[in-house]
Image (cartoon, rainbow, N blue to C red):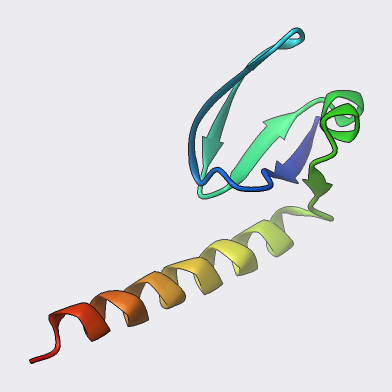
Length: 70
């Protein structure tokens, strides 16, 4: 089992012939052969996943502050 980044979904469930996989913050945990067959980008380890989700959260927070600015 490995962590893979979905190409465009951020949250949801993807149904494949190998089963259904939950996507949270663009990352899903699924068997390596399934992730490779789907063409998803593998994450090296959980530290990379944490760093990428933190960067996404900072980006979202910055965009929200732009929207709420007077």
